[in-house]
Length: 629
Image (tube, rainbow, N blue to C red; front, side, top):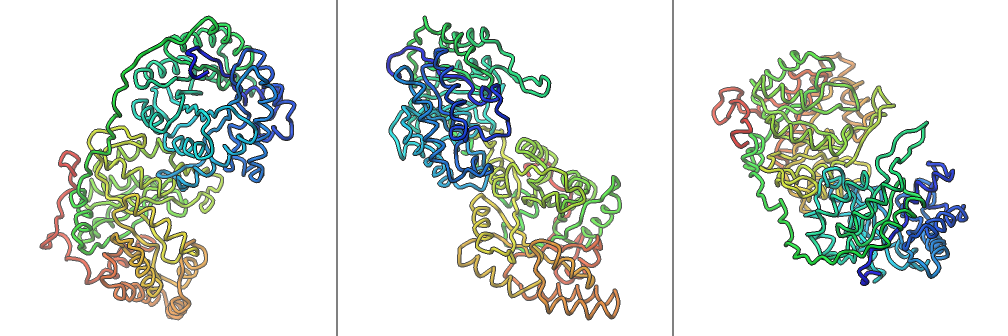
């Protein structure tokens, strides 16, 4: 079939066909291979009777990651094997059986926590089950991230030499979900050794026709296209695809004439669509097109990032090994930032290097960190360090924010995952978490190299100073160190710790970083306690904070003498920790408890360079984007 030059027909959308036959959308469709085999077999028979020459197994989501939420993670092989056997029985000797494999539904590196090797193992496990059922080829489909489909290809090829069809999904602009264009993903798939490459799903046949027309000059491999039946519409609570069988048939013909050797349907295409498509392509022979495929498109990663010392004043101090002192101020709860800006002006006058702006700490409603930081830099001239979280934004929103931040002159970022909404006063609010802090660091690093997540050029590179968080007192320290390794590997420029109340623990942590060669500048988080209640709250109700019993006892004794005694004891404890850490860290971040910047400055007494106008400081306005910063 691969060699004969004719156009051939795949089947249609299996999931939507099951739904049309009364299967609830909340069911695990893949498990139906075991519990409702007769329904699955019926769909296969109807597609075969309609003229499909290749039947895909009902296993699109039959990987361990997607089966786990349904409780079927221990039946991966069985579900895939039975899925292949059902399709094999329906195909007989009149059709081929393609083992269908879709994405894992998990974020993988560099934008998620799943390692490439782990992803490959999950795909390999699924492929082994399909092989046991007797498939003739594999179809890897509806992938939006080329890195993931490459691991799927590798996983399949580790256990089989059967033909592999690899299909990406693209949007109206012919870009994948990560913004990768065909000029980038086609040569990658070809180099991976696939036998057929193409596109599927998307928004309908017209878009996939445009994709095939764009892909055809890029490769000499056979092409495939399996479009949706248009965009779904909501009809009395059900999603309906409205592209008619006649319309799909017309586009099947056009797809073959544009160079596709294999066509079929995806979501919303049933047996009647496939029947009409079969009639439309039966007289056609795929055109013999001789192409001279261009060389691979150069990666945008060839752009050199702006040197750290030129990105911001904070970056300059980090690059030169100079001590750094920052203060954290929580954004205002309302719409008036004047009180906060007055406090920032005091910090600038005192000579701090930057003000840290948290992003909805403990899931509390505050003015946005990006807007707050712009106000700080524009109205006080002091650099801001934006705490940027993954909690509230999808990947597209993050990219939009970061491009805007660059244009507005924000340069210093602390990239963190973010506290889940259940910690705050709006526990029913939803969190996004498209990526975690590791993925976000990779994302920002890509922008600093002049490319988006899909590898496309964004023109001039961004120039962010990338900070990450690390917790010396994490309950699972080994896991924390592994995550820190990946943050450093992703390109982090510096790290800020959770508040340090145990100097011995911090010293041991720094020694461990040295042993593991995790050498980036570390700023120790310092939180001056102000009362016994404050200490008890942090120790017992804030995740990731550990306060020694001796410190708690000191705060109890001081609080018994009065509020001011407690505040002074908290400052004393903070200064003792700072003194003990000495030059083992490159600087400290001091929190201003309840917005009291005078307490933070007491902790920093003797550390700062003397404030505005001091020799050796540069206190002018923050450089604008036009100045190259």
